[in-house]
Image (tube, rainbow, N blue to C red; front, side, top):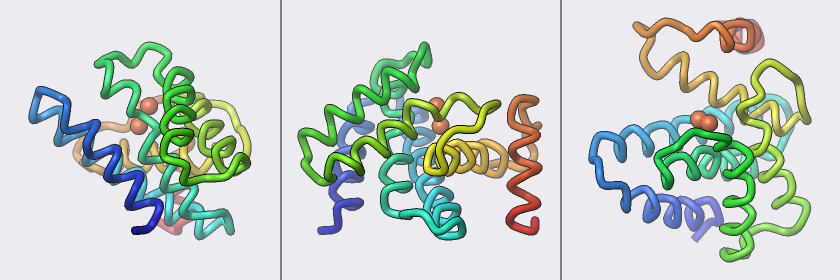
Length: 153
Ligand SMILES: [Fe+2]
Ligand SMILES: [Fe+2]
């Protein structure tokens, strides 16, 4: 089994513990949607698509597990480190890269490392493109515009 598949199996099991079926469905849709977007963006920018995809699978897990978005990116990075330590799928550098991306993913108005930026952009792609009838959030508009230019959309 690929390590991405192994991580997804773990994440699926965690999400399946959520009681509300609608929240479960949107959690899965968001994590897998961001994961696919992260793969595409990383590939386009010459970064590791597998690491990007793994970071995406973990990025909002803390919020889904606790039901709170309060400081979920920073707390989520600690949770990601715990999970990756347990699953032993990544080396130290890869773990650091994934945890950094999760840690910074809510800081959409500043620029961080290239892999951090992949996760932020993938998150924005899913927020903005999952349902085109929904208005784009003000804090995501500039980033979305940049992405449309980069991808010729
Ligand atoms: Fe988030
Ligand atoms: Fe997200």
